[in-house]
Length: 238
Length: 309
Ligand SMILES: Nc1ncnc2c1ncn2[C@@H]1O[C@H](COP(=O)(O)OP(=O)(O)OP(=O)(O)O)[C@@H](O)[C@H]1O
Ligand SMILES: [Mg+2]
Image (cartoon, each protein chain N blue to C red):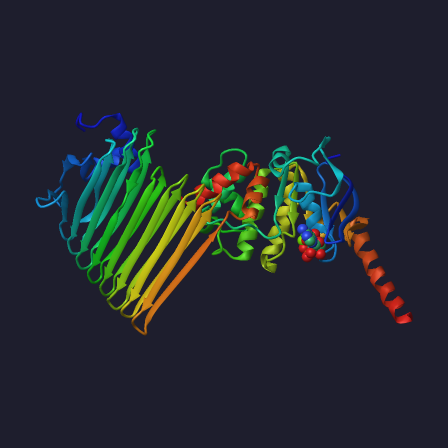
């Protein structure tokens, strides 16, 4: 087992954002987390990375209790995180950021290779600053490149598809499909995209801060469809 | 290089401009108020002023891509060095001028260098001017630098000025003045970092007198501890012209940064923009670098290094 969450609770403004989450994730798996807006998906992965601290509960990573470790300690143990909204930096170039991300020294050529892999024409980007002059989609791909380079035991993506156009989306799917061979780690990916859910080993459905379901994407999607129909019928009857 | 130059001098020179590069073109090295080394070339002549301390630098017209180094070093505590350097750049000449001042002060008395640099660019001339300021030493004597730069641009000429003061200067008042004729462009980028009780004041004063003159003034600074920075930009649009001035500052601890824009449009087609952004390092930037394995302190340092790069 790679990761275990025990009784994780997170409450803000009298709202139970995460309500007693218990979860285990195995080595070398591709797991998708899905669920409605505001259901607590981002909060859950931030708690795994250490960006948010749970009010109660325990996080075990690779056999070690990491609940009280800082973000960078977790990063150095092998957790990596791609933000839903990538961070911008004035003065820091794409190459600088990729150099900071890689654990070993990388050449500009290697940096370009990673950029190409996430669908960016590398030459045009490698020397640009990671600032507001880049478009949302470009920033998003650079963000993905930073975590691909880390090659961590556990790589978390928070809605990697957001802001990426339909045409490039196919290439991106390939990036995720290759992730497994590429970095031989576990991928935890928040997504609303059926195509991403379909390539996952397992899908976790989060609703109102609770794990509502867990299984193959086919089962989860089917059950959701049935639930929706039931709801409609119920509404009509009442 | 002569034996007038010892190891401290060499280190200081290397801080303000690379020593090997200095000797590759025309140069004039000034130490403790006196010129100690000089080289002129076919296109660049350097003449000592007779009425006041300083030099006149003449660049022949049509000179292509020559380097001129004029570093100043001060190692004597208690010295106030005032120098006037005038640059006359001929028509269509294209040169890179590297100036800089390094102060090493191990003692109690203040050391001060006030460099007044005036540039006269003829039609079509192009200058890149790089200026670096640096202070070091263990004494409590202050290291003070007050540079004045005055730039006169004739039609079709342009100047790009980069200045940096990253370490060890206790007090600085930096004045940069530009007078622009038609079809000229003046770009200024300055980088300042202050620590401790340091004080830095920057005043830009640019007159856009000619049609299609333009200026872009950027200040990026980091203020830490109890240091104070003032950024004043006065820009006058007296013709159809364009200006963009921006002050971008990171503030830490109890530091203080004040940005005062003063843009005056005296012409209906003057387009003058000012932006100022002052704030602490964004928490999300630190978090992102922490997810890459950097500690909070390391992350801050990386962000500042990038910002001032
Ligand atoms: N620090 C906080 N303080 C108050 N409310 C918070 C805090 N963090 C998250 N929330 C709230 O918790 C809920 C869950 O947020 P979260 O970002 O985890 O949702 P999500 O499932 O990722 O949604 P989306 O699909 O829109 O990205 C939201 O209602 C959000 O406003
Ligand atoms: Mg989210």
